[in-house]
Length: 399
Image (tube, rainbow, N blue to C red; front, top):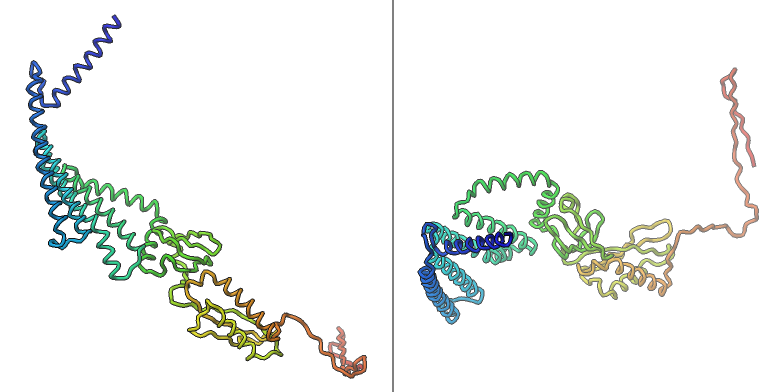
């Protein structure tokens, strides 16, 4: 009994599959018998029609592509334009083949019409999407804007084109796009309130890219963080310091802070301080300093270097040494300054110019008898009593 029930169960499944296949090829449940031979003939006939249509469309696609490929000079097409033309022809061929197949397998006319319209809109937005990058590049190149802005605008425009394209395609099939956009707007507003700091960094990132206060590769100083800019994203700016440490600064902090761009010009001036003794000759020391600067490769000859007396201090004469370098040398500036100080010290030693240090000198007079006599000094004593508030002064000379 159990075996018969299992057999009936599987037979019922086979009958259901049989009926479903029959209905899929155009049969009707009202018919008492299934005429497989007639429907097989109809299916084969439909397949042959589809193959003929696909062959005709494929032939026209191949012929048009061949004409374009062998007549680039006549049509004034470069490689890029020829590639775009082939892509458009390929898309038209695929869409036409799809519509031909749908028309032969009894799709509703409204569905075929909606598919055709959706394909046209999708093709238009595809052309806009593929050509938007080239257009943005040409515009930014004309106005001299950097690559970071180009990538930003490409991303924004790509998202906008894709959104409008999907909305236009869905609208052809009866979707209520207005309600969908309104719902997305409400969701976007809620997300905006929940992520105010992220939006602030995003807006600040766009401002930084548009103002071009600094670019990737510049050497900047932000809040005592000095280094080379390696990334300017929409949320943060990455700075690589001399210690090979990446400092990630939020763009809102960058926008509200004082930023020093050390490499915005063709050359930059730096200075160091050197010290000589009071007894040494200033001109000789200056000549030694300038000679060291001349012999240093990274120091520019123009603008001219200088070594002037900045201060006559308590322990010597202080020189301020000013020199100019190229932006590429900014990353090695601590090492350059240390090398200059070392070479100037060697030059001073060779010229018998001493470098003083904090010290105290006691100058004693010569040819005197000890102990040295001192001048007399006067002392005064005042007495104040409660009964007599008047002051009584007593003076005495002491030797």
